[in-house]
Length: 223
View 1 (cartoon, rainbow, N blue to C red):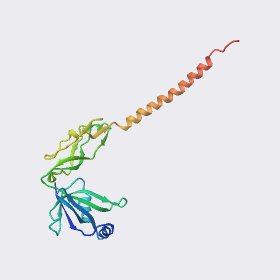
View 2 (cartoon, rainbow, N blue to C red):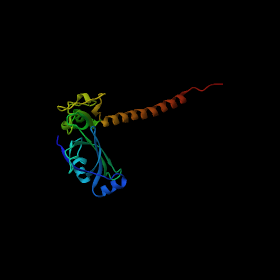
View 3 (cartoon, helix red, strand yellow):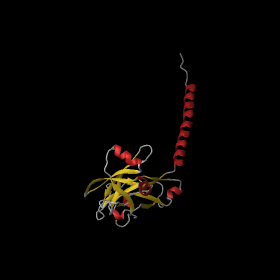
View 4 (cartoon, rainbow, N blue to C red):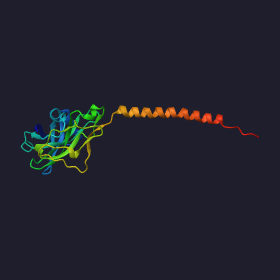
C-alpha cells in the first residue's frame, strides 16, 4: 500500500481558545500518541489532511513530515477524527504511532464485484457489512478486500469464513457473520401479498351470502 506523507508541527497552546485560533489560521489541533510514547500535542494542516486523508476510504499508513526531529519520520495511523456536526469541518485528529514490526487490527473496506446470478433472476444484492477487521503489519494493510458475488443465487450469502485475504493478512472472527446476500425479488412478495388479499376479499362476500341464504331458508316455527 502507498504511504501518505502529512505535515505536522508541535503546538504549545491547548484549550478552546487556542484551538479556535489555530483553526482560523487553517490548522487543526491533534494529538500524537502510541504504545511506546507519551501523548504529544500537534498541529495539522487542515486542507492537506482533507485532501490526502479525508477523501480516501480505508486505513492508510502515514509518514509524518516535520521541521522537528521529534516528529519527522514517525509512522502513524489516523485513529479518530472529530468533525462539526453540521458543517462536517475537521475539528481534531488523533494520530497513533505504530510499530512496523508488530501486527495491528484495522478495518478494511469490502468491494463486491461481479453480477450475482440471483440478481439476474430479479433478486437484490444486499451488503450486510461494508468493512472487515483484519490483522496485519502496518506496511501490509490492504486498500480493500475484493469479494466476487457472481455465483450467488437467491438466498445465497458470503460469510467471513468464505473470504480469502491477501498474503500476510489474517481475518480474526468470533462469529461467522454474513457479509453479503441476495434477497428474493420484491415483485414476487408483493404479488403473493396481493393474491392473498384477493382471495380474502372474495371469500368475505361469499361467506356473507351464505349466511344470508341460511337465514332465508330457515323454517319458521309453528304455534
